[in-house]
Structures are given as C-alpha cells and as structure tokens.
Length: 204
Image (cartoon, one colour):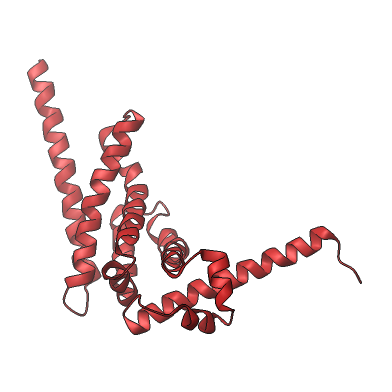
C-alpha cells in the first residue's frame, strides 16, 4: 500500500520528534552522570540510538543540543510546577526543588562550554516567571520599562540560583534557597511600598 504525501509527512514528523526527544533525554542523562558537558557527539548519538549525522542535522552542534535539552527539561518539569499560578511561595519552592534534583546537570551546564548560553536561558526563564509578579507590584508600565525591569530582576535571581547550584554545600536545601528568594521579593515589595507611601505624603 502506498502512503499519501500527507501520511508520509506525518510519519516523518513523528520520527523527528522521537529522535529529538531521545537525543535531549540522552544529553540530560549523560551530562548528569559524567558531571561535564565535554561529551563526544558519538556518545550522545549512541545513547539515543540514532546516527551521529542526525545530531548535526537536527541541532547543528553538540552545545546547541545541550542547551535545547535544558529548555526541554525546564518546559516539561519546571514550568508546570513553578509557573502554574499557584501560591508564590509554593512556586518558588518548586523551582528550588527542581534545580536541587537536577543539580549535577545544571552545575555542569553552568560551568562548561555552554555556560554563556545557559545563563541566558535561565535569565529568560526567570524573566518570564517574574513578569506577572512585577506587574502586580508596580502596576502598568510601558513595555520597555517592564522588559528592562524583568531583565534586571531575572539577572539578580539567576545570579543567586547559579551560585547556589555551583558552590552550595551538598546536599542542597531547596527550602533554604526558597526562603532567600522570598526574602528578596519581600524586600523589593517593602521598598516599593515605602517609596509609594512617601510620595503620597509629600503630595498632601
């Protein structure tokens, strides 16, 4: 039986998704096990049961695969837990627990050949998670100011999390990080409210 072009395309798309998923899962597993991003492409391909050529066709190079694997891990595991609109404290704790659980992977990514791209990826994550909280705190802002503020806060959050992941004593305590991040949020909120109250008094 001959397949219609649309059927062939659908089968091809599924094969691509499966091979990409297998490569990204293999990347997370091997980086976590070896504690380094210096993993030969052939090892990644063999762990995913695909050809070495397919790695380059689908991702371009090894580091691009590793960064994409990070994005996939965050999208699949972290965002549903930390960014699902639950209580802020619960969301922050879920974020800390995720990073603690996958510490070997993230630490290797933040100290290896992907460090620059990895930092940008995490800052983008923190920016997206902070955006609504900043809007609630500061009210409506013009787009440029909102983006700059989100970047500013995300960079600081990323610095705290990165240092904790890289240099924190084993075993990492997710509650300790969550409490630190919540204290920073509280300090930012208190500072903003105090300034707003002062402005209102001067206007009276």
